[in-house]
Length: 277
Image 1 (cartoon, rainbow, N blue to C red):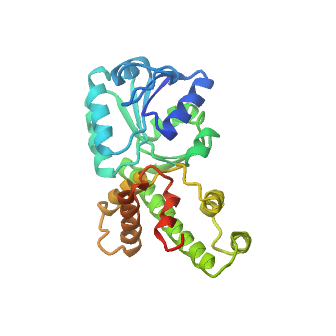
Image 2 (image 1 turned 30 degrees about the horizontal axis):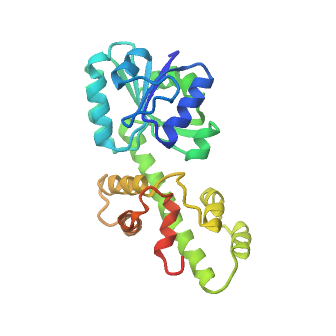
């Protein structure tokens, strides 16, 4: 697995492409919206798939993944590997795996956690689902852009774990937003709030990451409202989630934020939905 192509040059895919290029591993990149200045840019996903041993897909949703895989299927052959890193549901991922293996190629579900800063600093964390032999083969390549790689189990389990992690993050963000708004309304300064939070059992990596954004009211995207909203829709459709009140609440907040024009902002922008937020 000496070369990789990246399909999808959003916030994360662009960072991965730069890091793969710096390591001498990048064979090609492509994005639906052309980015000819991207490293190793190709004019089509088919060209990327032809040039690379591993084709890593990181696009918006199941429909986008299916569009890419449909295009590259004719050039897949034994020896090629599709690494599907978009956040999608397990059912869709299982379908895409069948498309790939029917061509004689191999497929790995590799959803991830870590936003823009983590991707830039090679701190992405992968949840790998599928053939353990393939996971071992891909370890050296994926280590170029990641700090940890967890072997989860099946393709579907890895996808579900990723959605569960994002549900937890979205719920924490809603709680943090409400807590901060509550104390601001009472006249407590952000300095006092975040200082006290650091000594509280509820302090988390999310609070540390989002503190500067909340203080500055800077909602430039690390992970956007529209993508978190999509993930919560997928989570709602996975398994039996008919009695998940927190999932319902955060999904509704993200839906409202997107409807109010915040879709491309960081998902911490949900604080703006609260009074005086």
